[in-house]
Image (cartoon, rainbow, N blue to C red; front, side, top):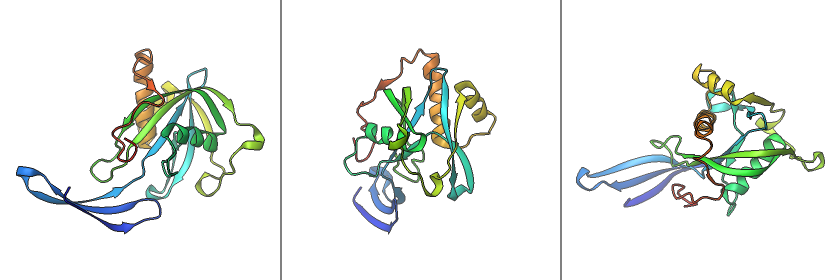
Length: 197
């Protein structure tokens, strides 16, 4: 990259324009969304049911079944701490055991967002007096426990559309079939994240 300019400063993310030297392919200009990144949590109970929340997503004008998730927008907060916070805030759940399930770029042609999906087990409830007060799109957000196979089947039938839920649930099905041997430690390095690596 030989130059970078912020084209638009947004409430959550910015749009930037870079000049990129591709060597023999020449110099190109690219615009994309600069994103803080995000974490998501695939929380499984003792019966292998996944915790799903339903949230309104205005850009697509739909309520979507999703994994608990959130932006990495707290300065200096490690990804695992953000995942713990999001799980507690969105589902009133805590987890004793954590692993990295999946790292991915959901839209690498248009944004630099990197997402880490954690697997969380050994779940307990957040004490009632310590629960997060939800507002805006999160107010009244329902929680549903869905067997992992049923969630997979909903995806394959075209009934679940949130990309992180799709990726996380399918990855969990494969990981479980492999005896969970693909899981990484919860604090595994994340070099692909543009600011945490």
